[in-house]
Length: 194
Image (cartoon, rainbow, N blue to C red; front, side):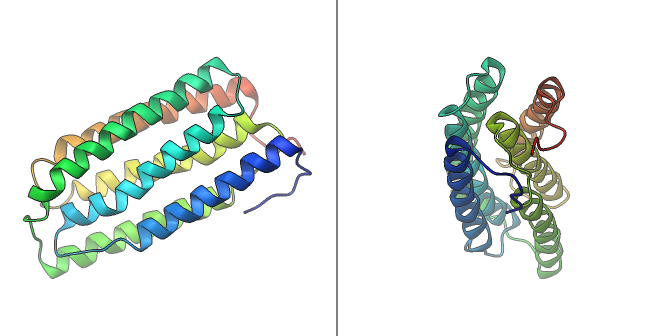
């Protein structure tokens, strides 16, 4: 991770926990057991992505006293817990919807490119002693990755049960990005305060 500032104790603890969450997410997404189903593959890679957002939100809630950021974090926990439940419930049906080799390879190539960019942006997110801003800098690329991955999946033949889940991910995370960008402007999070 790109860490140029001298961090205080709270910021060090926050950043350390974030590093562990990010490492676990990357391992879960890259280590997912992929099959001949784009629908099932999406679910298996998105669940660890959502779990990371929940853990990141729990992490910021230990440190923030910003009411708007608390609301954003609590909303992420609620929405992504529900989304995980919905994906787990859909997996049984979705795994039956298989795709041809060409589509599978093309889809996974798109997913890999999106994940590579997202991992890099999250890993290089600037961190300083403003923990609220750190969270926003980390979560915006995380949400952007989910939106791009969901849009990519919608370009292929996927199971009907998954489509409303993808649309909900896009809607909720685009709204979350807007909320965090607005809060970042209010807090002056454009660059690290080193």
